[in-house]
Image (cartoon, rainbow over all chains, first blue to last red):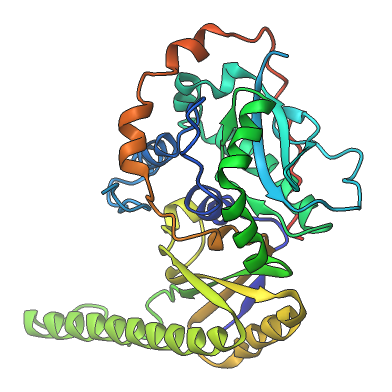
Length: 62
Length: 291
């Protein structure tokens, strides 16, 4: 087995964190243009355009 | 000012200034917005990119998404060298500074709790892969199966071998995870990554994040490193240290449902009408250098 430490941050690792992590702020009543759901929906679209078989990376909204 | 306020992170006030040449999304320099004893790290982004409709289209554009994600990460990274930032989800945007202040007021207790919990801690990513060995484990198939029965037998042996490898990899991942959680304060399991998206060789068996005090990071990394010769055919990848993105709360889909309903349409028109003449050139330097 090998242990690899990458210098360059891979985009997938970054997206795991930036699109599934980070504080979600949906409570702003002034403006919701960057609503998290857009991100969720569109990443799904992105991923399914790459591969139809990939399960959604996020839970379905309840 | 035209444009919108993009919020990267919320922090406690810190003494050290940010690097002078630091740039955020679209090349704009991040600014510190102090309010109620907290600091929001913000920059101005063009409404042309971040209005509801524009954003929807932009997020379908992998190059734009990559540049934006890397710029976001670059700012967070710079912050981790001077403080413990609380990173916000990608593309958290407000109309102006006063909306950012209102957001801080509404959530300051929550922010403080999270900052207390995450202070002095970093996130490490650990992924376990089952290496793809090109049919090396299975006996070289006879040039031509002597009979249909031989063929089936060899097929069965192959799938059996694969099954065994899987089990071994999962077992290894479990035991590694157990050892790592002893050194970590918390963990999150991300979904295994799809090889087509990651471009990584082999099959991702585990994709975990661990919250580790800075002081114990060296120990943690050494532990991962020590697993080097434990299992043949298995690869472990370590990423980090990251800001604690994965530990900002049990928010997966928190209020997603209701927000989705309310948000639709309401602000779309307003935002779209407010166009910004120029889009800052998208030459975003890759600042996400992994440190």
